Length: 305
Image 1 (cartoon, rainbow, N blue to C red):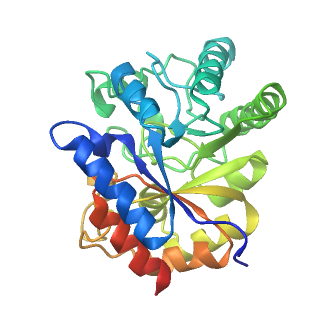
Image 2 (image 1 turned 90 degrees about the horizontal axis):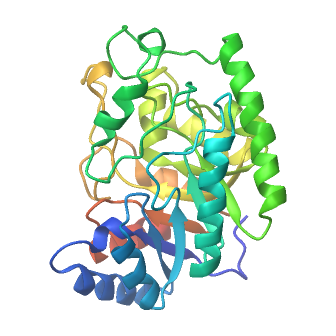
């Protein structure tokens, strides 16, 4: 049920405010949230520069973070050694305290022990992730898209590590909500299904286009899997964006979403939002790479429909 005592929180990803017109877009987004009675915030993207972080912090807006910030490598709690990721987590926790950040989300489960380069700092996602590509985890031995390795002994070993290490993070930094995100199903990223997230017993950020791709790749129903996430997992945050990909596109050719909410799609986003609303979720990030105030108005229409 909806908590009537809490105000809906709507954030924009910080990538929306880059480049010419960024500050003007920021003002328009803030005003649009005020118009609809939403609490406005910004989620610092993991590709944010120090300058971007500083100007948004100086603006006075409430911030959250898509971790890791200002890091050359990503977080992987499934690796044999925790220490590289733990150093990143400690550094980010200190930065969050400095910025007054109490909520963060990160991708934290990849089927590798190798360092995972952080993309967005002059390198693309594919360039970085190709360094850890394992063909035996691919649907055809060459595509980046995952096969279903979740029944393997290796997966079970790694997901147990992730669960135990998430508990350690919560104990070490209890003043910060550390959401782990369901992954885009590529390059051995492994937090894919509702049963995986439920097993972790940790706050979850539910990403729409990641789930859309996962459900298509593994022949699950998107809205049924959404319901399982909402009923079985600790969903505390939603990454909302549209995907243009449809069943007519070969599975190996699928990509992520991060498109405006009015993008033509087959996802039925109003139904998805309604399911989240009815489950009491009141915290949404419009993770639209070049999002504008129009996405806020579109969200309001879907929320109130």
